[in-house]
Amino acid sequence: MNLKLKTLTSGILLCCIFGFGQDSIPKPEKIKQPIDSVAKQQSKKSVDSLIDGNKVITAEIKAELDSLALRNLEDHQHASEIDQKWLEELYSNTLFDTIYKTVSELKYEPVDYPELPTDTLKARLQELNARTPFNIEYNPSLESVIKSYLKNRRQSIERLMSLSDYYFPLFEESLDNYDIPLEVKYLAIVESALKPRAKSRVGATGLWQFMFGTGKEYGLNVSSYVDERSDPIKSTVAASKYLARLYGIFGDWDLALAAYNSGPGNVSKAIRRSGGYENYWNIRPYLPRETAGYLPAFLATMYIFEYAEEHGFKKERPKYHYVETDTIHVKKMITLDQVSELLEVPIEQLQFLNPSYKLDIIPFIKGENYTLRLPRNVVGKFVTNEAQIYAFAEHEFNKREKPLPQFFDSDSKVRYRVRSGDFLGKIARKYGVRVSQIKQWNGLRSNNLRIGQRLTIYPRKPVITTKTASTTPVKKTINTNGKSTYKVERGDSLWSISQKFPGVSVQNIKDWNDISSNKLKIGMTLIVSN
Image 1 (cartoon, one colour):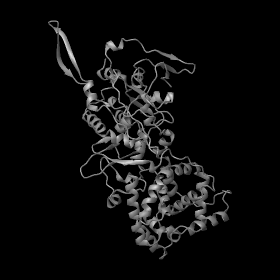
Image 2 (cartoon, one colour; image 1 turned 90 degrees about the vertical axis):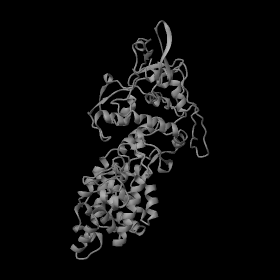
Image 3 (cartoon, one colour; image 1 turned 135 degrees about the horizontal axis):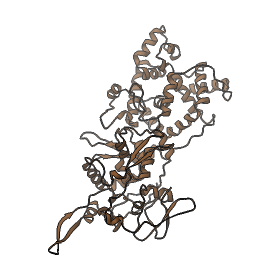
Image 4 (cartoon, one colour; image 1 turned 180 degrees about the horizontal axis):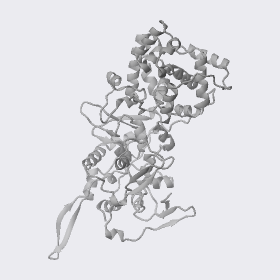
């Protein structure tokens, strides 16, 4: 029997202690058995009886340390269930592509939208103009853009409203620090559709679409591992500084936004060509085509968000908010995959919270302060078990020269066809593997998948000997719904059960049986296929 599997089934137990404070955030749990002692328990001595019939110890074989010793850092009910469809939406570039095309190809033809009479729109724009420093005056072109958005982009706007619940609070904090109008937060929607990894055809990147040179000028560093243009906080601070500087040059927020999009030089040229006019609507014909539609798109977005209730918009709130997260300064290199596996946080959630790490790797470089952003309810868990977590990460990196992880056999690969609704995290959980492994096996550089695409996957399963293979077959039954079930026996754990069914992970069993802890009762029936 494989040493790791034998060690686990012999009853290695990581004890966890629960407690809740007044703010309902779980207190950190402690691992009573350090990782070193687990490794010692995994060490076995080989006995050879072939020499003169006498038993002698020939060598000491140490079991290779892996994540199984740390998989159950805590044994509590995980409170945050993530809406997978919403997480998938976070990584879709459809909204960004749509907005980019809309702004550059805006048409100002009259739009039939009787739900918003012109007189009502005029009154609301006048009210909006009174409470913002932007020149929001009615004109037929702006009416056309607003009605076109309301009529043709309603679903996209609702999705943007859901994302805005996470990003707007951090935007407003930075904008306020630099005396920027808070309404500038809507600019990020026009720039990037709130996609931190959005990249335009000319290379502008991030929520605020910084070019490489401009980003460097405002302190946004780019390396092989990190692109700080995709960091929500750092890029927002940089955008605030840049906008404050542009306002100091032009003394007008409309022109400052136009300069943010096309550069101060193009705005000053448009002023000259217009004969000296300095109102955006007067110089608009002389601006680049994309910038000409830039401010109308911004104002239309501002109007719709400010009067969302009047237009009957219903937004789905995200499962967590910016204030429900916190950061940890990393002390050693670690990957989001490793954090996901040890803390039992979906990889998509970690990628959303840490978008600036291009390879999903957080490097440790002297003089740099790289941070890991986590949901608050697992921060204590990370800090309490920090030494063990970094030890595991270091051990994993030491194995990276191997072509395949030890638990994978090249003869057991499967070909998976991508279906509608699939994303890498979902497929990884289905086969009990990591997102980074699927990307490595298939040469993927991004998280984007195509329906019908074929993926090579090596399902996670232990390496077994001939003797193990000949043991009693797994007892399973088929219920009336056509799903396989398994009856828990003495000594079973979620991990040992998952290994009896190829392609089934611990998370699969939890999801199919609606359970959140690792505790099992003898005799309980579990669904082991879906």
